[in-house]
Image (tube, rainbow, N blue to C red; front, top):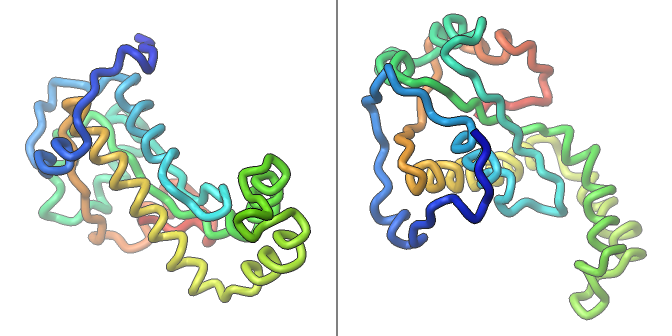
Length: 194
């Protein structure tokens, strides 16, 4: 079922922030509708990020996926019940290479479109000769920290959206099988599982 943005029920932001709770028990017979998953992902995608880099990525895994059991082996023991009752799990990732691969395009696009202007101390030349070279000089550890903060913003927006749509959600700890999620998806090292 497809639904337009105007049909999605709204909830006051401050009310959603105040009322949101981590839900740890789900009805295993219910499946979250696709349009709600797409809305939750869209909320994460719209989170603030530096220079339009969009380094946060997500993988949606459904209970009928071939990887479900393999991912379940990675979930921390106290979250197994939560996991087995869920119809979906969203794996949030930080793509460290996005910083180095997308910053140039993101900032140059913002400058050329007028979103960064001389009135704000920016212009295309400044972006290309000052800003981007400086950003590209950041050590990987610093970039990792900055981008994981942005992933946290995306996840926060996704959780609030989930609540506002009436979908129970909870952050799920993974620790039983170190690197198990990365192995299951064949993730290269520049993807950091959050």
